[in-house]
Structures are given as structure tokens and as C-alpha cells.
Image (cartoon, rainbow, N blue to C red; front, top):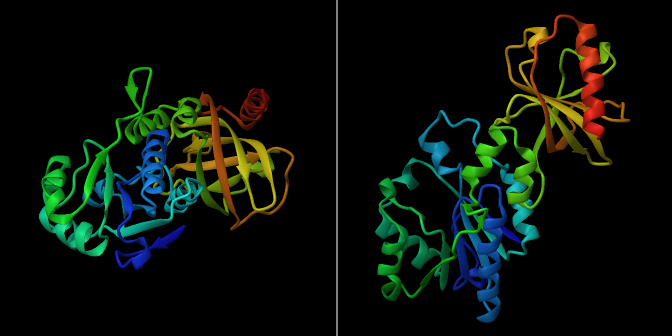
Length: 302
């Protein structure tokens, strides 16, 4: 899969089938869109790609959405590659780009830059300055700019539309086991191990401290997880929270890896969330905390 950081794609990727959207999480609904796009591309002997935006426009317009992403750009890249796309365009979403009129978006980007033959979007797709462009306006200019707009019906589960919004809600409620059914895989966070206060080591439970960054903030508490490093993939337990027993002031992801004791500082790990075990709690003393951690580990192993 060829990755572009701008709209200047090679000629071999022009006159292609292109999906447009954030595709945050690359969930089963997104996968259905990509499957349909690939099927059409194969039928017409065309290339297939995705046009997406960084940062996610909602995060650009509202700086309060610091914990919003389901996946990092690195993860999105990985999952799109697994979906066998030919190319992936990452367009920088900045103030100048946000001011483009929807007509110019169609004329200058869809027609002149990309020369799309087929465009796949969701039925609620919005684009252009003040989100003034929509599916109706895309269809209005089809003949003039020689493309066709296609809308894949949303994927539903238990009569509910599967969406990135639902995934974020479930994560924030700690319902990570349900998220796996929507993503088609466990939800995960990638981050580097930072140096902490080493308190876990002093009580017999060494942990890797990882920043949440701009990921969706899970419900504070303890989770059963799996941890993937460059040379291992092991089960473990994780705590997301302020560490109230130690009067912590900053939210942190702490991970204890079962059966592994080695220096992982500055190493990149991927943490896969499987089940929520219990909410975060303040303990009276270290013995009470140690007893609870032993219980948590038993529950996690189950």
C-alpha cells in the first residue's frame, strides 16, 4: 500500500475507486465499505484507495477533544494495509484546508487532483467550508466532473448502527469486550514505556507506565490485557487512572506483564484490552492494595 502525505498522487492511482472519510478505528462498518470499493475496483480493473484527514477534523475544530482517537495514525495505516488497499492519502487538515468551498473541493481535489472514477462515502458525509457539502451535492456534480458517488448502507448489530461514536462510548464506559465485536479485534493502545516512580516494583508488581496520549479515555479502573512487544506477546493486567492510593495527579496507563521482568524503558508496546475487572479505588495502605492486586490478577487470568 502506497502512502501519500499530500494530494499529489502518481498517475497510476488516478481514475480510481476512492473512499473518503476519517475511518477512525477501521471498524467492521468501515471494512464493509472497503470491501465494496475493492469489489467495484476489481470489476472495473481500477486501483482502490482511501482519502483521510489528519488531525481528525473534529479534533482540529474543538481543542477540548484531546482524548478522542480510537486508533493512532500508525494503527490506521496497519489496518488499512490488512484490507489490501492500493494507496492511502493522508491530507493535513489545517485552517486553510478547512476554508475550501465544497464546489472547489469537488473541482480541485476530486476532479483535478485525484480524477476519481468512483467515490465511496457514508450517507452523512460532510465536506467543505462550514460542512456545506454533502452527498446530494456530490451527486449534483457527477456528470460535470465525470465520477459516480456510492453510499454503502451502514452495518447494524442488534438494530444499532455500528459507528466510531458507539465505539468511543463503549470504551469510555469500560465495555471493551463489546468493542471487540465492532472492531473485529480487541481495542488497543500503542505507546512508549516511560520511567515512573517504581512503586509497583517495591510492592512486588513492576509495571510499565504508558501515556494515554490522545486516545479515547477508557473508564478508570483495572483491565485484563495482552501486551505485544517486539519479541513477546503476553497476558497481563492494566490500571487506567490517577493512582489515588499514592495521590496521583495525572491519568496513567500502568501495565503488569505476567511472567516477564526486564527493562522496557523507551520500548514501544501495544496494549490490547479484553475485559474490565473493577473500577479504580483508593486503598488504606499498601497491604490492602497488594491483596487487591493479587485478586485482580487471578480474575484477569480467568
